[in-house]
Amino acid sequence: MRSHRAYNKLTSNFNDLKQVCAQLVESNKTQARLFPVYYRVGFYGDKWGDLNRREYIYKESAMVRLADFTQRLKQQYGRKYGEDKVQVLSNSTTDFSKLDPEIYYFQLVSVVPYLEQHEIDERPTEWDRNYDICTHGCSAARNLE
Image (cartoon, rainbow, N blue to C red):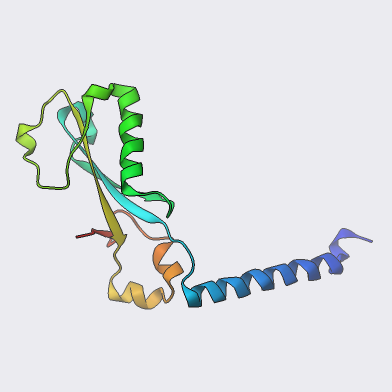
């Protein structure tokens, strides 16, 4: 039998796809899916050079807690720059003029996707509202407060 006429395999594949689609529809109804979490990471201090006062949105698995992500980044930068040279800033307002110029500071804040009304209208399900979202130069995320 020629591979392009393998209708039994094609039928089996379509049955599998039908089951997956049915599961997706059901999980959307019950909202049983785990969606990613987002964190804003800001880099502060002269030691960062061009990164000083730059902020980025990081997308992580739903299982990654803020404390775990903070610890991971602290260890990562600590290995590179020295444990004593990396500090995490609290979420309160910081007077940047009082930062030690020899320390690499960073700050993490949980954020949630922010969508304008027209985007909400275009994204009817939770899945649509949590995936393929812009994280820079558009209304992407706002601080959790």
